Length: 355
Image (cartoon, rainbow, N blue to C red; front, side, top):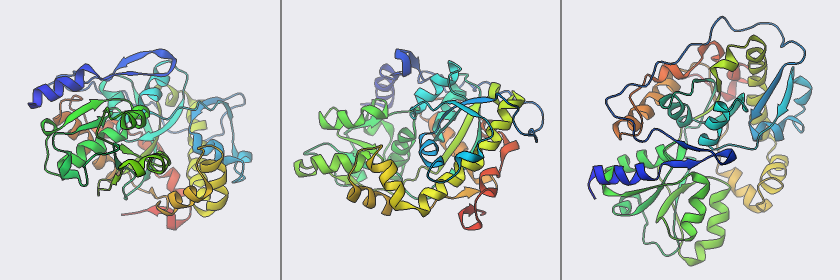
């Protein structure tokens, strides 16, 4: 299959079903010569006062919702959370931003790039870095894939609007393979598990706890995990620019950021309670599997400076643009640097990334 044939195969299937049954094309057909529209900058300086009474945000950050109570952070909320939408996939969040139903969300670094490419104006307001691999490539039962070089000629689950999509592209680059050497099967990451089980794809990147649950069920049938050195460096909080242009909501976002970073630190320092709260009760894995998952993780780190994060985001945007998935864009436009370092300042020095 040629590059253009592989690209066409992806384009035909990049209509991803989003929340509410809406279908959104994620700009897979954008010409490579076009430049993404310049994003509007939030106006004014960052508010310094408390959010006025009645300020509300709809926040799609499930981890923080589950951490606030046991971490004793609920009392520090200075505004009302009107809703905690249980959404996490990038396309779902983008649709929520478009529908004005989500004010703040957490994602990997790629959804803001995708949103910018299709004209959804939003900004990154907080950054967590994860310098270690977060995804493992799971193979379908009976597959002969044992290393990333074996991906040649295989069907790979690919979601261009989510972190998993960039993990695939970076893994192919690491293996010396081009997009034309494989068949990229465009699916939302929520369908990767079913696609592996039915052998619709040969391999797909899975994160925890999905990976543990999948291998627990299918390892006996020949499924395996193929590890790589590919990292998905960024976890971000981001919000529509219209939210950040609202002084009351911008103040609420500013006050939420420290709770987000402190909640993640609490989970790291209280693993037994977090395993029970999240992995067992919320995600449905066993306590033993929860312990194995947590043991594979690394402590949260929040950068004081966003320079490295912006560089990483630019490399990711360029990788997507080079593949023809999004137009060229300036990744620095995706960050609202008024909020830079707030997450890092809220935690102790050992959780700050200063390099």
